[in-house]
Amino acid sequence: MNKRLLQFALAIVALLAGVLGSQALFAAQGRPRLVVMLVLDGLPQWQALAYRDQLQPDGLARFLDRGAWFSQAHHGHALTVTASGHAAMLTGAYANRSGIIGNEWRDRDTGQPQYCVGDSSASYIGHPTKPLDGTSPRNLKVQAVGDVLRGASPGSKVIAISGKDRGAILLAGHRGTAYVYMSDTGQFASSSYYMKEHPAWVNAFNARRPADRYFKAEWKPLLPEAAYARSVPDNQPWFGPGGGKLPMMMGAPRDDAPNAAFYAGLLHSPFADALALDFARAALDAEQLGQDDSPDILAISLSAHDYVNHLWGAEARLSHDHLLQTDKQLQAFFQDLDRKVGPNNYVAVLSSDHGFMPAPQYSEQRGIASPRFSGGQVLARVNAQLQQRFGVARLVPFTSASTLVIDRNLLARHGLALDAVAEAARGLLQAEDSVAAAYTRHELQAGSRSGAPFFEAMRRSWHQELSGDVMFVFKPFWTSSRNVATHGSPHEYDTHVPIMLWGPRWVKPGRIDSRVLVVDIAPTIARLLGVNAPSTNEGRLLPFAAP
Image: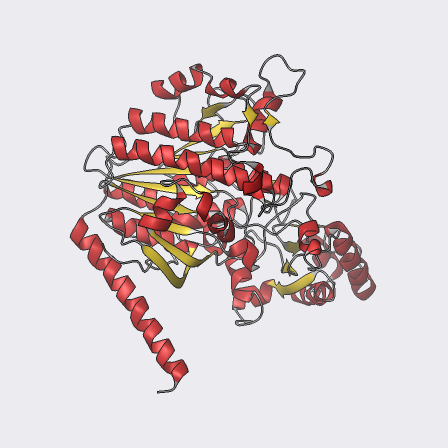
Protein backbone atom coordinates (compact mmCIF):
# COMPACT_ATOMS: atom_id res chain seq x y z
CA MET A 1 0.00 0.00 0.00
CA ASN A 2 1.48 3.36 -0.98
CA LYS A 3 1.84 6.16 1.56
CA ARG A 4 -1.15 8.15 0.30
CA LEU A 5 -3.49 5.15 0.45
CA LEU A 6 -2.23 4.30 3.93
CA GLN A 7 -2.89 7.86 5.14
CA PHE A 8 -6.39 7.72 3.63
CA ALA A 9 -7.13 4.38 5.29
CA LEU A 10 -5.94 5.63 8.67
CA ALA A 11 -8.10 8.73 8.31
CA ILE A 12 -11.17 6.57 7.59
CA VAL A 13 -10.44 4.37 10.60
CA ALA A 14 -10.07 7.47 12.83
CA LEU A 15 -13.33 8.92 11.51
CA LEU A 16 -15.23 5.65 12.06
CA ALA A 17 -13.78 5.36 15.55
CA GLY A 18 -14.97 8.86 16.36
CA VAL A 19 -18.47 8.23 15.04
CA LEU A 20 -18.77 4.86 16.77
CA GLY A 21 -17.45 6.44 19.94
CA SER A 22 -20.06 9.18 19.78
CA GLN A 23 -22.82 6.60 19.18
CA ALA A 24 -21.64 4.63 22.20
CA LEU A 25 -21.59 7.65 24.48
CA PHE A 26 -25.19 8.55 23.60
CA ALA A 27 -26.35 5.08 24.60
CA ALA A 28 -24.22 4.76 27.73
CA GLN A 29 -24.50 8.18 29.27
CA GLY A 30 -28.20 8.92 28.91
CA ARG A 31 -29.41 12.24 27.66
CA PRO A 32 -28.70 15.68 29.10
CA ARG A 33 -31.45 17.63 30.79
CA LEU A 34 -30.49 20.73 28.86
CA VAL A 35 -28.66 21.54 25.64
CA VAL A 36 -27.37 25.10 25.43
CA MET A 37 -26.76 26.21 21.85
CA LEU A 38 -24.56 29.31 21.74
CA VAL A 39 -24.01 31.28 18.55
CA LEU A 40 -21.41 34.05 18.43
CA ASP A 41 -22.62 35.94 15.39
CA GLY A 42 -19.79 36.77 12.99
CA LEU A 43 -16.96 34.96 14.80
CA PRO A 44 -14.34 33.49 12.44
CA GLN A 45 -12.42 30.47 13.65
CA TRP A 46 -9.07 32.26 13.58
CA GLN A 47 -10.34 34.88 16.01
CA ALA A 48 -11.61 32.28 18.47
CA LEU A 49 -8.01 31.09 18.80
CA ALA A 50 -5.97 34.25 18.20
CA TYR A 51 -6.13 35.52 21.81
CA ARG A 52 -6.19 32.19 23.59
CA ASP A 53 -3.60 33.34 26.10
CA GLN A 54 -5.85 36.27 27.09
CA LEU A 55 -9.09 34.32 27.60
CA GLN A 56 -10.74 33.84 30.96
CA PRO A 57 -10.11 30.41 32.49
CA ASP A 58 -13.74 29.29 32.12
CA GLY A 59 -15.23 31.09 29.10
CA LEU A 60 -14.17 29.92 25.65
CA ALA A 61 -11.35 28.08 27.42
CA ARG A 62 -13.97 25.72 28.86
CA PHE A 63 -14.37 24.38 25.32
CA LEU A 64 -10.72 24.67 24.26
CA ASP A 65 -9.21 23.12 27.38
CA ARG A 66 -11.96 20.84 28.71
CA GLY A 67 -14.22 20.24 25.74
CA ALA A 68 -14.02 18.97 22.17
CA TRP A 69 -13.33 21.46 19.41
CA PHE A 70 -12.96 21.10 15.67
CA SER A 71 -10.12 22.90 13.95
CA GLN A 72 -11.64 22.43 10.48
CA ALA A 73 -15.32 23.30 10.89
CA HIS A 74 -16.97 25.03 7.95
CA HIS A 75 -20.26 26.16 6.54
CA GLY A 76 -20.99 24.21 3.38
CA HIS A 77 -23.12 26.79 1.56
CA ALA A 78 -22.12 29.76 -0.58
CA LEU A 79 -24.17 32.71 0.72
CA THR A 80 -22.78 32.86 4.25
CA VAL A 81 -25.09 35.34 5.95
CA THR A 82 -26.81 35.40 9.33
CA ALA A 83 -30.11 33.79 8.36
CA SER A 84 -28.67 30.95 6.31
CA GLY A 85 -26.09 30.15 8.97
CA HIS A 86 -28.58 30.12 11.82
CA ALA A 87 -31.06 28.04 9.83
CA ALA A 88 -28.42 25.40 9.07
CA MET A 89 -27.37 24.87 12.68
CA LEU A 90 -30.45 23.26 14.19
CA THR A 91 -32.19 22.01 11.05
CA GLY A 92 -29.14 20.36 9.48
CA ALA A 93 -30.50 21.57 6.13
CA TYR A 94 -29.14 23.98 3.55
CA ALA A 95 -31.13 26.73 1.86
CA ASN A 96 -32.03 24.53 -1.11
CA ARG A 97 -34.24 22.64 1.36
CA SER A 98 -34.90 25.14 4.15
CA GLY A 99 -35.94 28.04 1.90
CA ILE A 100 -33.77 30.48 3.89
CA ILE A 101 -31.75 31.64 0.88
CA GLY A 102 -30.50 34.82 2.56
CA ASN A 103 -31.37 37.48 5.09
CA GLU A 104 -33.67 38.97 2.48
CA TRP A 105 -34.53 38.36 -1.13
CA ARG A 106 -37.05 39.57 -3.72
CA ASP A 107 -40.14 37.88 -5.06
CA ARG A 108 -39.14 36.53 -8.44
CA ASP A 109 -42.32 37.69 -10.16
CA THR A 110 -43.14 40.98 -8.44
CA GLY A 111 -39.75 42.17 -7.23
CA GLN A 112 -41.22 42.85 -3.79
CA PRO A 113 -38.78 42.53 -0.88
CA GLN A 114 -39.08 39.38 1.22
CA TYR A 115 -37.54 38.94 4.67
CA CYS A 116 -36.33 35.60 5.97
CA VAL A 117 -38.52 35.67 9.10
CA GLY A 118 -41.08 38.22 7.93
CA ASP A 119 -44.74 37.34 8.43
CA SER A 120 -47.46 39.97 8.08
CA SER A 121 -49.93 37.80 10.01
CA ALA A 122 -47.86 38.04 13.22
CA SER A 123 -46.81 41.07 15.26
CA TYR A 124 -44.54 41.85 18.18
CA ILE A 125 -46.17 41.76 21.60
CA GLY A 126 -46.28 45.22 23.13
CA HIS A 127 -44.22 46.81 20.34
CA PRO A 128 -45.02 48.29 16.94
CA THR A 129 -44.32 46.00 13.99
CA LYS A 130 -43.05 47.27 10.65
CA PRO A 131 -43.87 45.45 7.40
CA LEU A 132 -40.56 43.58 7.08
CA ASP A 133 -39.93 42.92 10.77
CA GLY A 134 -39.16 39.33 11.69
CA THR A 135 -42.02 37.76 13.61
CA SER A 136 -42.26 34.04 12.73
CA PRO A 137 -40.60 30.99 11.14
CA ARG A 138 -43.21 30.57 8.41
CA ASN A 139 -40.58 30.90 5.66
CA LEU A 140 -38.57 28.05 7.19
CA LYS A 141 -39.66 25.03 5.16
CA VAL A 142 -38.05 22.34 7.34
CA GLN A 143 -37.99 20.99 10.88
CA ALA A 144 -35.52 22.03 13.54
CA VAL A 145 -34.24 19.77 16.32
CA GLY A 146 -36.55 21.51 18.78
CA ASP A 147 -39.57 20.65 16.65
CA VAL A 148 -38.67 16.96 16.74
CA LEU A 149 -37.95 17.14 20.48
CA ARG A 150 -41.26 18.75 21.31
CA GLY A 151 -43.11 16.23 19.14
CA ALA A 152 -41.50 13.34 21.00
CA SER A 153 -41.52 15.00 24.44
CA PRO A 154 -44.35 17.54 24.86
CA GLY A 155 -43.01 18.53 28.27
CA SER A 156 -39.74 19.74 26.76
CA LYS A 157 -39.17 23.46 26.24
CA VAL A 158 -37.30 25.17 23.44
CA ILE A 159 -36.42 28.83 23.99
CA ALA A 160 -34.28 30.97 21.70
CA ILE A 161 -32.97 34.47 22.45
CA SER A 162 -31.08 36.93 20.26
CA GLY A 163 -30.32 40.54 19.52
CA LYS A 164 -31.60 39.83 15.98
CA ASP A 165 -35.04 38.52 15.08
CA ARG A 166 -33.61 35.99 12.60
CA GLY A 167 -31.04 34.88 15.17
CA ALA A 168 -33.75 33.79 17.61
CA ILE A 169 -36.54 32.66 15.29
CA LEU A 170 -34.49 30.33 13.09
CA LEU A 171 -32.98 28.59 16.15
CA ALA A 172 -36.39 28.20 17.81
CA GLY A 173 -37.88 26.41 14.79
CA HIS A 174 -41.63 26.09 14.46
CA ARG A 175 -42.49 24.74 17.91
CA GLY A 176 -40.08 26.64 20.13
CA THR A 177 -40.42 30.19 21.44
CA ALA A 178 -38.29 33.08 20.22
CA TYR A 179 -37.50 36.29 22.10
CA VAL A 180 -35.87 39.23 20.34
CA TYR A 181 -34.11 42.37 21.58
CA MET A 182 -36.17 45.42 20.63
CA SER A 183 -33.68 48.02 19.48
CA ASP A 184 -36.13 50.90 20.01
CA THR A 185 -36.86 50.17 23.70
CA GLY A 186 -34.06 47.91 25.01
CA GLN A 187 -36.66 45.27 25.97
CA PHE A 188 -37.18 41.70 24.79
CA ALA A 189 -40.33 40.63 23.02
CA SER A 190 -41.86 37.61 21.36
CA SER A 191 -44.60 37.72 18.72
CA SER A 192 -48.21 36.71 18.30
CA TYR A 193 -47.06 33.67 16.32
CA TYR A 194 -45.90 32.14 19.62
CA MET A 195 -48.37 33.49 22.18
CA LYS A 196 -51.06 36.08 22.86
CA GLU A 197 -49.21 37.77 25.72
CA HIS A 198 -45.89 37.49 27.46
CA PRO A 199 -45.47 35.36 30.57
CA ALA A 200 -45.21 37.27 33.83
CA TRP A 201 -41.45 36.75 34.04
CA VAL A 202 -40.89 38.50 30.70
CA ASN A 203 -43.02 41.46 31.81
CA ALA A 204 -41.11 41.61 35.09
CA PHE A 205 -37.75 41.57 33.28
CA ASN A 206 -38.81 44.36 30.93
CA ALA A 207 -40.35 46.41 33.73
CA ARG A 208 -36.94 46.69 35.35
CA ARG A 209 -35.65 48.40 32.16
CA PRO A 210 -32.27 46.69 32.45
CA ALA A 211 -30.87 48.34 29.32
CA ASP A 212 -31.15 51.76 30.96
CA ARG A 213 -28.32 50.96 33.36
CA TYR A 214 -25.91 51.22 30.43
CA PHE A 215 -26.92 54.77 29.57
CA LYS A 216 -23.71 56.85 29.66
CA ALA A 217 -21.78 53.71 30.60
CA GLU A 218 -18.36 53.34 29.00
CA TRP A 219 -17.08 50.39 27.05
CA LYS A 220 -13.54 50.28 28.42
CA PRO A 221 -10.80 47.90 27.27
CA LEU A 222 -10.27 44.97 29.60
CA LEU A 223 -6.50 44.89 29.21
CA PRO A 224 -3.62 47.40 29.11
CA GLU A 225 -2.85 48.99 25.75
CA ALA A 226 0.18 46.77 25.10
CA ALA A 227 -1.99 43.64 25.21
CA TYR A 228 -3.66 44.65 21.92
CA ALA A 229 -0.47 44.75 19.85
CA ARG A 230 -1.83 41.91 17.68
CA SER A 231 -4.80 44.04 16.59
CA VAL A 232 -5.33 47.06 14.36
CA PRO A 233 -5.32 50.22 16.52
CA ASP A 234 -8.40 52.40 16.99
CA ASN A 235 -9.50 55.28 14.76
CA GLN A 236 -8.25 53.93 11.45
CA PRO A 237 -9.00 56.19 8.45
CA TRP A 238 -11.24 53.53 6.91
CA PHE A 239 -13.56 53.48 9.95
CA GLY A 240 -15.47 56.37 8.38
CA PRO A 241 -16.88 59.59 9.85
CA GLY A 242 -17.94 57.95 13.11
CA GLY A 243 -14.43 56.66 13.80
CA GLY A 244 -14.05 54.10 16.55
CA LYS A 245 -12.06 54.33 19.77
CA LEU A 246 -12.10 52.91 23.26
CA PRO A 247 -13.25 53.90 25.77
CA MET A 248 -16.62 54.47 24.11
CA MET A 249 -19.63 55.99 25.85
CA MET A 250 -23.13 54.62 25.32
CA GLY A 251 -25.59 57.33 24.32
CA ALA A 252 -24.99 60.72 22.73
CA PRO A 253 -23.28 63.29 25.02
CA ARG A 254 -26.19 65.73 24.74
CA ASP A 255 -28.92 63.19 25.51
CA ASP A 256 -30.27 63.35 29.03
CA ALA A 257 -32.30 60.12 28.91
CA PRO A 258 -32.20 56.79 27.07
CA ASN A 259 -33.78 56.89 23.61
CA ALA A 260 -34.12 54.67 20.53
CA ALA A 261 -30.69 55.64 19.20
CA PHE A 262 -29.09 54.63 22.50
CA TYR A 263 -30.88 51.26 22.59
CA ALA A 264 -29.89 50.53 18.99
CA GLY A 265 -26.30 51.62 19.70
CA LEU A 266 -25.95 48.98 22.41
CA LEU A 267 -25.94 46.37 19.63
CA HIS A 268 -22.39 47.31 18.64
CA SER A 269 -21.05 47.09 22.18
CA PRO A 270 -20.60 44.34 24.79
CA PHE A 271 -23.76 45.47 26.58
CA ALA A 272 -26.36 44.03 24.19
CA ASP A 273 -24.94 40.54 24.72
CA ALA A 274 -24.89 41.10 28.48
CA LEU A 275 -28.60 41.87 28.25
CA ALA A 276 -29.28 38.74 26.18
CA LEU A 277 -27.48 36.56 28.72
CA ASP A 278 -29.38 38.22 31.58
CA PHE A 279 -32.63 37.48 29.76
CA ALA A 280 -31.46 33.88 29.32
CA ARG A 281 -30.85 33.65 33.06
CA ALA A 282 -34.38 34.88 33.68
CA ALA A 283 -35.74 32.25 31.26
CA LEU A 284 -33.64 29.55 32.90
CA ASP A 285 -35.16 30.32 36.29
CA ALA A 286 -38.75 31.04 35.32
CA GLU A 287 -39.15 28.20 32.84
CA GLN A 288 -37.19 25.77 35.06
CA LEU A 289 -35.03 24.69 32.15
CA GLY A 290 -33.00 21.56 32.75
CA GLN A 291 -34.81 20.74 35.99
CA ASP A 292 -36.61 17.51 35.05
CA ASP A 293 -36.32 14.47 32.82
CA SER A 294 -37.94 16.18 29.83
CA PRO A 295 -34.86 17.67 28.15
CA ASP A 296 -34.90 21.30 27.07
CA ILE A 297 -33.05 23.45 24.55
CA LEU A 298 -31.86 26.98 25.34
CA ALA A 299 -30.46 28.68 22.23
CA ILE A 300 -28.72 32.04 22.60
CA SER A 301 -27.41 33.97 19.62
CA LEU A 302 -25.13 36.80 20.71
CA SER A 303 -25.40 39.38 17.94
CA ALA A 304 -23.03 42.18 18.89
CA HIS A 305 -19.80 40.72 17.52
CA ASP A 306 -21.23 40.82 14.01
CA TYR A 307 -22.14 44.50 14.36
CA VAL A 308 -18.68 45.28 15.75
CA ASN A 309 -16.94 43.48 12.89
CA HIS A 310 -19.06 45.19 10.25
CA LEU A 311 -18.22 48.60 11.70
CA TRP A 312 -14.50 48.15 12.36
CA GLY A 313 -13.34 44.77 11.03
CA ALA A 314 -12.44 41.56 12.83
CA GLU A 315 -8.79 42.59 12.93
CA ALA A 316 -9.50 45.78 14.92
CA ARG A 317 -8.67 46.29 18.58
CA LEU A 318 -12.37 47.00 19.09
CA SER A 319 -13.20 43.50 17.86
CA HIS A 320 -10.33 41.98 19.84
CA ASP A 321 -11.57 43.55 23.06
CA HIS A 322 -15.18 42.76 22.25
CA LEU A 323 -14.35 39.07 22.03
CA LEU A 324 -12.57 39.25 25.39
CA GLN A 325 -15.62 40.97 26.88
CA THR A 326 -17.89 38.25 25.45
CA ASP A 327 -15.56 35.59 26.81
CA LYS A 328 -15.81 37.08 30.29
CA GLN A 329 -19.61 37.17 30.02
CA LEU A 330 -19.70 33.53 28.94
CA GLN A 331 -17.59 32.53 31.95
CA ALA A 332 -20.12 34.09 34.32
CA PHE A 333 -23.00 32.48 32.43
CA PHE A 334 -21.42 29.02 32.52
CA GLN A 335 -20.87 29.32 36.24
CA ASP A 336 -24.56 30.16 36.68
CA LEU A 337 -25.50 27.13 34.56
CA ASP A 338 -23.25 24.92 36.70
CA ARG A 339 -24.95 26.16 39.84
CA LYS A 340 -28.54 26.03 38.58
CA VAL A 341 -28.51 22.98 36.30
CA GLY A 342 -25.38 21.11 37.36
CA PRO A 343 -22.27 20.53 35.25
CA ASN A 344 -23.19 16.89 34.65
CA ASN A 345 -26.70 17.69 33.47
CA TYR A 346 -26.14 19.84 30.39
CA VAL A 347 -24.19 20.06 27.18
CA ALA A 348 -23.04 23.37 25.69
CA VAL A 349 -22.40 23.75 21.97
CA LEU A 350 -20.83 26.87 20.45
CA SER A 351 -20.58 27.89 16.81
CA SER A 352 -20.99 30.86 14.49
CA ASP A 353 -23.23 31.68 11.55
CA HIS A 354 -20.34 32.93 9.37
CA GLY A 355 -16.83 34.29 9.48
CA PHE A 356 -15.62 37.64 8.11
CA MET A 357 -13.69 38.95 5.16
CA PRO A 358 -10.85 41.21 6.30
CA ALA A 359 -11.38 44.93 5.80
CA PRO A 360 -10.06 45.78 2.30
CA GLN A 361 -7.59 48.34 3.64
CA TYR A 362 -6.20 45.78 6.07
CA SER A 363 -5.72 43.27 3.25
CA GLU A 364 -4.06 45.84 1.02
CA GLN A 365 -1.59 46.75 3.77
CA ARG A 366 -0.53 43.11 3.63
CA GLY A 367 -0.14 43.03 -0.12
CA ILE A 368 -3.51 41.41 -0.92
CA ALA A 369 -5.57 43.23 -3.55
CA SER A 370 -9.08 43.82 -2.20
CA PRO A 371 -11.04 45.91 -4.72
CA ARG A 372 -14.36 47.55 -3.98
CA PHE A 373 -16.79 47.68 -6.90
CA SER A 374 -20.40 48.53 -7.69
CA GLY A 375 -22.83 45.65 -8.01
CA GLY A 376 -25.25 48.04 -9.69
CA GLN A 377 -22.71 48.78 -12.40
CA VAL A 378 -22.13 45.07 -12.99
CA LEU A 379 -25.87 44.58 -13.46
CA ALA A 380 -26.05 47.55 -15.84
CA ARG A 381 -23.24 46.14 -17.99
CA VAL A 382 -24.87 42.72 -18.14
CA ASN A 383 -28.20 44.26 -19.17
CA ALA A 384 -26.57 46.44 -21.83
CA GLN A 385 -24.83 43.47 -23.42
CA LEU A 386 -27.95 41.30 -23.23
CA GLN A 387 -29.83 44.07 -25.01
CA GLN A 388 -27.23 44.09 -27.79
CA ARG A 389 -27.61 40.33 -28.19
CA PHE A 390 -31.38 39.91 -27.83
CA GLY A 391 -32.72 43.38 -28.61
CA VAL A 392 -34.60 43.72 -25.32
CA ALA A 393 -33.80 46.21 -22.53
CA ARG A 394 -33.55 45.26 -18.83
CA LEU A 395 -33.94 41.53 -19.21
CA VAL A 396 -32.50 41.33 -15.67
CA PRO A 397 -34.50 43.85 -13.61
CA PHE A 398 -32.86 43.02 -10.27
CA THR A 399 -30.67 40.65 -8.28
CA SER A 400 -31.88 38.55 -5.36
CA ALA A 401 -29.77 36.56 -2.87
CA SER A 402 -26.69 36.50 -5.16
CA THR A 403 -28.67 35.61 -8.27
CA LEU A 404 -29.73 37.43 -11.41
CA VAL A 405 -33.50 37.35 -11.86
CA ILE A 406 -34.62 37.30 -15.48
CA ASP A 407 -37.94 38.95 -16.39
CA ARG A 408 -40.23 36.15 -17.53
CA ASN A 409 -42.85 38.57 -18.85
CA LEU A 410 -40.28 40.06 -21.22
CA LEU A 411 -39.20 36.59 -22.29
CA ALA A 412 -42.78 35.65 -23.19
CA ARG A 413 -43.47 38.96 -24.92
CA HIS A 414 -40.40 38.64 -27.16
CA GLY A 415 -40.37 34.88 -27.64
CA LEU A 416 -37.08 34.34 -25.85
CA ALA A 417 -36.05 31.13 -24.08
CA LEU A 418 -35.11 31.37 -20.42
CA ASP A 419 -32.19 28.95 -20.74
CA ALA A 420 -30.70 30.85 -23.67
CA VAL A 421 -30.84 34.22 -21.90
CA ALA A 422 -29.57 32.71 -18.65
CA GLU A 423 -26.61 31.10 -20.40
CA ALA A 424 -25.75 34.39 -22.09
CA ALA A 425 -25.99 36.23 -18.77
CA ARG A 426 -23.80 33.59 -17.13
CA GLY A 427 -21.10 34.15 -19.73
CA LEU A 428 -21.26 37.91 -19.29
CA LEU A 429 -20.93 37.58 -15.53
CA GLN A 430 -17.96 35.24 -15.88
CA ALA A 431 -16.23 37.92 -17.97
CA GLU A 432 -16.51 40.45 -15.13
CA ASP A 433 -13.28 41.05 -13.20
CA SER A 434 -15.10 40.66 -9.88
CA VAL A 435 -16.84 37.32 -10.54
CA ALA A 436 -15.28 33.97 -9.62
CA ALA A 437 -18.07 31.66 -10.79
CA ALA A 438 -21.61 31.77 -12.15
CA TYR A 439 -24.09 28.98 -12.88
CA THR A 440 -27.53 28.91 -14.46
CA ARG A 441 -30.82 27.62 -13.12
CA HIS A 442 -30.55 24.67 -15.50
CA GLU A 443 -27.10 23.73 -14.20
CA LEU A 444 -28.09 24.13 -10.55
CA GLN A 445 -31.23 22.02 -10.99
CA ALA A 446 -29.47 19.28 -12.92
CA GLY A 447 -26.28 19.21 -10.85
CA SER A 448 -24.46 19.18 -14.16
CA ARG A 449 -21.34 21.05 -13.02
CA SER A 450 -20.43 18.86 -10.07
CA GLY A 451 -16.80 19.47 -9.14
CA ALA A 452 -16.70 22.90 -10.78
CA PRO A 453 -15.47 25.80 -8.60
CA PHE A 454 -17.91 26.54 -5.74
CA PHE A 455 -20.70 24.62 -7.53
CA GLU A 456 -21.77 22.43 -4.60
CA ALA A 457 -21.76 25.33 -2.15
CA MET A 458 -23.77 27.45 -4.59
CA ARG A 459 -26.25 24.65 -5.26
CA ARG A 460 -26.86 24.37 -1.52
CA SER A 461 -27.67 28.10 -1.34
CA TRP A 462 -30.03 28.03 -4.34
CA HIS A 463 -33.73 27.22 -4.01
CA GLN A 464 -35.70 26.21 -7.08
CA GLU A 465 -38.85 28.16 -6.15
CA LEU A 466 -37.32 31.22 -4.50
CA SER A 467 -33.98 31.93 -6.14
CA GLY A 468 -33.18 33.67 -9.41
CA ASP A 469 -31.82 32.29 -12.65
CA VAL A 470 -28.04 32.81 -12.57
CA MET A 471 -26.18 32.45 -9.28
CA PHE A 472 -22.79 34.11 -8.89
CA VAL A 473 -19.88 34.32 -6.46
CA PHE A 474 -17.35 37.13 -6.27
CA LYS A 475 -13.61 36.58 -6.23
CA PRO A 476 -11.77 36.39 -2.88
CA PHE A 477 -11.33 39.77 -1.19
CA TRP A 478 -13.56 41.59 -3.70
CA THR A 479 -16.55 43.39 -2.18
CA SER A 480 -19.45 45.60 -3.17
CA SER A 481 -20.47 46.21 0.46
CA ARG A 482 -20.48 49.68 1.99
CA ASN A 483 -19.54 48.27 5.40
CA VAL A 484 -15.95 48.44 6.61
CA ALA A 485 -15.95 44.63 6.51
CA THR A 486 -18.47 42.05 5.39
CA HIS A 487 -19.18 38.36 4.68
CA GLY A 488 -21.39 36.26 2.43
CA SER A 489 -19.08 34.18 0.24
CA PRO A 490 -17.94 30.54 0.03
CA HIS A 491 -14.33 31.63 0.62
CA GLU A 492 -12.59 30.22 3.66
CA TYR A 493 -12.54 33.46 5.63
CA ASP A 494 -16.37 33.33 5.58
CA THR A 495 -16.94 29.58 5.96
CA HIS A 496 -14.35 28.66 8.63
CA VAL A 497 -16.04 28.96 12.02
CA PRO A 498 -15.80 27.35 15.46
CA ILE A 499 -17.65 24.21 16.47
CA MET A 500 -17.03 23.45 20.13
CA LEU A 501 -18.76 21.15 22.63
CA TRP A 502 -18.56 20.78 26.39
CA GLY A 503 -20.30 18.33 28.69
CA PRO A 504 -18.24 16.21 31.09
CA ARG A 505 -20.57 13.18 30.87
CA TRP A 506 -20.73 13.13 27.09
CA VAL A 507 -17.71 14.85 25.55
CA LYS A 508 -14.08 13.77 25.77
CA PRO A 509 -11.80 16.84 25.68
CA GLY A 510 -9.48 17.42 22.79
CA ARG A 511 -8.80 19.02 19.44
CA ILE A 512 -10.24 17.16 16.44
CA ASP A 513 -8.84 17.88 13.00
CA SER A 514 -11.45 16.06 10.90
CA ARG A 515 -13.26 18.38 8.52
CA VAL A 516 -16.83 18.84 9.72
CA LEU A 517 -19.76 21.00 8.69
CA VAL A 518 -22.11 23.22 10.65
CA VAL A 519 -25.08 21.10 9.50
CA ASP A 520 -23.50 18.28 11.55
CA ILE A 521 -24.57 20.06 14.74
CA ALA A 522 -28.27 19.24 14.30
CA PRO A 523 -28.06 15.43 14.11
CA THR A 524 -25.50 15.41 16.93
CA ILE A 525 -27.77 17.37 19.27
CA ALA A 526 -30.73 15.22 18.22
CA ARG A 527 -28.81 12.06 19.10
CA LEU A 528 -27.78 13.54 22.45
CA LEU A 529 -31.43 14.27 23.19
CA GLY A 530 -32.52 10.78 22.14
CA VAL A 531 -34.69 11.89 19.21
CA ASN A 532 -34.53 11.51 15.46
CA ALA A 533 -32.67 14.08 13.42
CA PRO A 534 -34.91 16.53 11.54
CA SER A 535 -36.44 14.87 8.50
CA THR A 536 -34.52 17.00 5.96
CA ASN A 537 -31.21 16.84 7.82
CA GLU A 538 -28.10 16.64 5.60
CA GLY A 539 -25.51 16.49 8.39
CA ARG A 540 -23.63 13.65 10.06
CA LEU A 541 -22.75 12.98 13.68
CA LEU A 542 -19.78 15.01 14.85
CA PRO A 543 -16.87 12.60 15.44
CA PHE A 544 -15.98 13.18 19.08
CA ALA A 545 -15.34 10.49 21.66
CA ALA A 546 -16.91 9.55 24.97
CA PRO A 547 -15.04 10.52 28.15
